[in-house]
Length: 328
Ligand code: PCA
Image 1 (cartoon, helix red, strand yellow):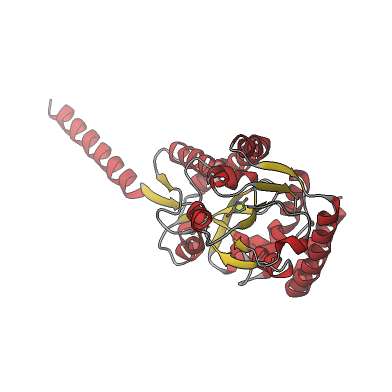
Image 2: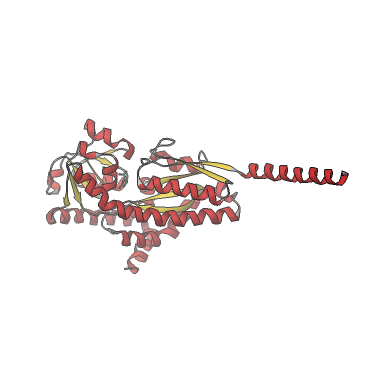
């Protein structure tokens, strides 16, 4: 009897220990994302979070905060770097001013299809990982936006028609595009564009059909010109110190979840391209390819921006572009 009691006591204390150690290991990670909850990037992020929570047996529980509700897009990278949040998502080209390499996915007409965007990503990934590690960030996965086109209130047939229009920009490249087309750039987060268009703070933008659809821009704008200028990417990053403390087993789970998320997110982005362009049409917008003259003018501007980017990005940038071209 005595023996049994001590066995039970032992068993209980072992269970208590196991419980204590697993709750000490359990971590809650808040994951800020900048775009609306219904956007495919956010849907993919929520699935990634579930995959990690389940796959790590609850050791790491990720909660997604979409729509810029925890941190606005422009503040997310810094929040991860400084450890205010362990993980988050950011349109990295928004930080091209810190390092030109971050803008590699927004060089006009360099990679204009999903296939090329995937190759450019493969070519740029090692350099980007290195730059991010120097900033205490570990790259987990990246998903492209659909091809970028131009939104306007009135019909536009040439660059001359754009003069003086207030243009919503989302990174350095889009602001530069505005300057070179004679428009007036104003930097506005995607979460705030419906209001900016409704109040006339902005009257045009370059973006995907997806963002126009998510933000119901047909309430204010009437034209979307397909240009396929580039496919910028969102990146999921984790703070390096946090990452260092994750067990090898959990790192494997997170990386596997990241691979699945990148695949699923890219697939959604492709599906969303046609779906959202139709959504813009259903909302009453005219959706068509830019005419040949306008396309040629935009390509000239693209050539200027490409040489400016190559000059700024130096040998590292050239190496990425050369590696990308070698994959063609
Ligand atoms: N949507 C984001 C970035 C690129 C895109 O298609 C935005 O407009 O902010």
